[in-house]
Amino acid sequence: MQTIDLHDTICLIATSDQRVHMICTIPALSNLDNLAARAVDMVRQRLGWRQGVRIELYKRIPLAAGLGGGSSDAAAVLLALQQWWQLPFSASDLLSMAASLGSDVPFFLTGGLALCEGRGERVTPLAYYWPASMRWLLLLKPSISVSTAAVFRALPATDYTDGTHSKAVSATLNANSDPPLEHLHNGLERSVLERYPAVARAREDLFSAGAAVVRLSGSGPTLYAPFAELASALHAHHQMQAMGYEVYLSRATHPSPGDVCLF
Image: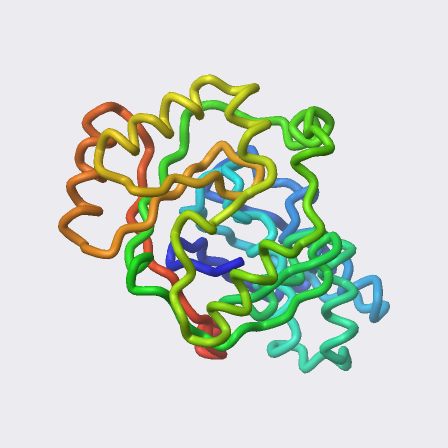
């Protein structure tokens, strides 16, 4: 897994009413079921604290896209609270809390480039190296929703893997070498393409716009296409935008402590 520069912004504000308030630029997410609010509540319960917190979430990552938006928000909240309140939690404690919030949350505690195993709770950071052939990432989100549960239920046994493929790609990256683009793999991709024709059509449109490789992100519906050259990425971006697709041009990023700011 690899973090990219498409991100949300979260502000945490102390309040005196001993409650958790969740405010989001997308009204449907302004509730305490939001993973960011659940992260705050988990910390308060673990410590027996009643400090009130107002969470302001400014969304940029598209919803239900297979891009880890909610998971990254929850991880950011845990890291911010750790700094803000000087929490007595070890790295292992934070990892356990993150895993209980969601499978992808542990990865976002460190971000960067990592091999994730198990449910996602076993995270092995890799030496930061990103191939020149993937310098630019074009993301395309078809305007449909994908049921992750249904995709997993429909997954044939032949599409399950033992992680050998992911470990091989990780080892190549860790050695500062470029894995062949065709080695990029997502075991859920075939199931999603078969169940959701709109995703399959979007994939073909990306190929027509010049993408050499197109892969599914997470459980979808977002697809990503790597490009070595900005001009080629922009050409494909403009073509997809003209066809009415929701598209984002992004790059891989390596988070730093400065990503969490205290005011």
